[in-house]
Length: 483
Image (tube, rainbow, N blue to C red; front, top):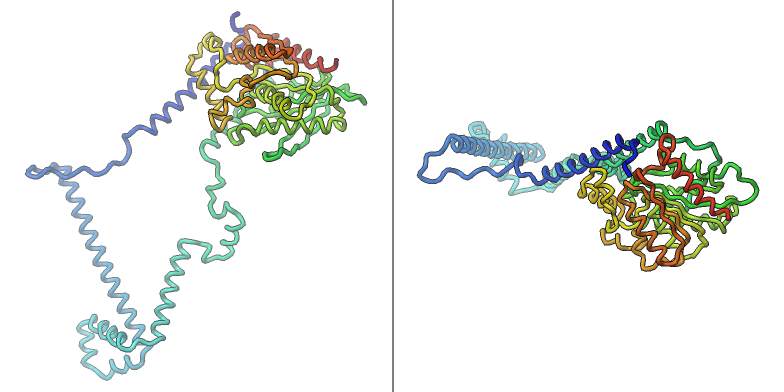
């Protein structure tokens, strides 16, 4: 089926984004490998028996000038040494009265000193060598220590100001301010996330549907060995004294953007809670690459444990709980059903997976979808590899079942599944393959493909009939928890 005209402009923007990303990466690699424009060693001099070229002569002149400057520096250093010796002799003479008297009693020595200043220095040095006093040595030691302290103070400001040293010990940033400054990659990620949030806000206003005003409550759940996770509970509008069903929900965003505060995500959860009559328990899991696999899975599992433990206090029926996930969130929701089966075996009743990515090796991507959109194969593969490398610390982790649920050794004893895919989305291959694996293991699973639409269809409820149908089908699936 042809792509819905609604997506034409968005497709153009997305294609440009993919090409620009690939081009930017290529340019960076070329710049890092380009040998020109870098400083090189000076060329060797002319061969023997040949007239030197003007450039060689110039180099020779520069070398001669450098040698002359070096000689002048050496002479200045020698003069400085003589001056230092003279100063030392003067100090010694001032502190040794006998030396002063001797000088006064011998006019010839004074005259000789007037003719040759260095003679006075040598004479003073000789007398000091014959009879060095402890006072002289002490003065010299103190002078050396003062000089050392001065140098140390120049290198380390805290030596001059002890309080600075204390502040440096208590505040690592005081010792090295650059240690707290984000690097270029972190700044680029921050810009990308700000742009994504701004785009999401604009899309909700332009083509989305705001969610209703309902009661929400936020909680913080501890995760053993990992960062705590924020959880937001969206209570259905008509919730009374009776406990209601609930789903633990995971947002999408390629593991690296998104969150429960994104306007379209928040609006969807509000609408689904009201229309399905279920509590949406949204997990604000940590983003990659700051936090990589399996942090997100463990945060989801901790939230699941917390939900069952606190269900009564939250007004939730612990016997009617499911999971819900979109895109990368669909990966986490599917992984959570495996972790639950392998560990606590809480009675999960349902899993709803929207355009899920369930195989990070890329083996089940259906690239016919991207080809139909005019996106080259290498760009589609590059995008998936980028997602996987951001989320996984090691590419071999892509074969682990909690990272790629499709690759689990068994899919038996998992909750019934409703899987939604889009025609113009390469992840439709993942959804089809996962539905087939669940069915082969005896799990009740259905896979529905929406024709003529793309990966993020559910966002556009305010402008696209297919998005409204998508919402209705998700709500119908969630209502199964009431039975």
